[in-house]
Length: 242
Image 1 (tube, rainbow, N blue to C red):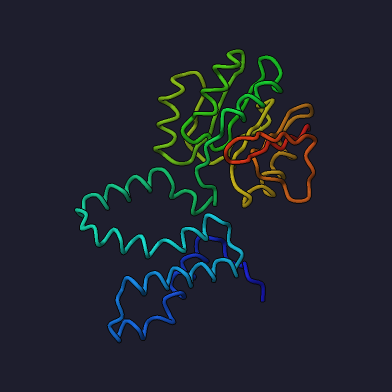
Image 2 (image 1 turned 90 degrees about the vertical axis):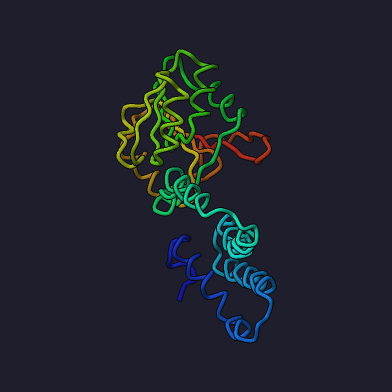
């Protein structure tokens, strides 16, 4: 039996529940709940590492119940929890399906792409988030025709307002976007969709176009160029020429 048949989101839910099992008898023995949530967090970390979940899921699984306990102790008004859930739903719940969290590209990523994109090229940002990368790229290269697609409604709205007509921002899935319309496609996603995205790139992108991935590789496909960005996240650009 392999250890990662489930995607990270349902696997994490099962891990966090399973991590409580050894400590259920201690609840009946009136152990301090603060100690139990810390032990549950340690057990969730061990299970997450054993299942080889991505690092950010290990952090989530480890800290979920300890942080929940701290918030409970803080006696916060319930309305703030509702507001937090609404904000999460509008910005991040799509990542449970796509397995793509919100990443923000650095200015070095903008500069590296700006120096490699041909004049008056059509550029698409897959998962454009808050629109920062497109806005900075437009400042450096006003000749470019820019577009973005974003699945989270609040992120999409922020991007639309930020670009203010300087780029065409569409609310929807990146899988529904026709890549044949663009000279350059940029993506800062996660390891999860890269193999399927590459198949889409092969089907749709024209000869001579560029596919650029920030940080995340395509399994089994070597890039034509790798650019180390030397930013705070130690990111890199992986560039394929079609």
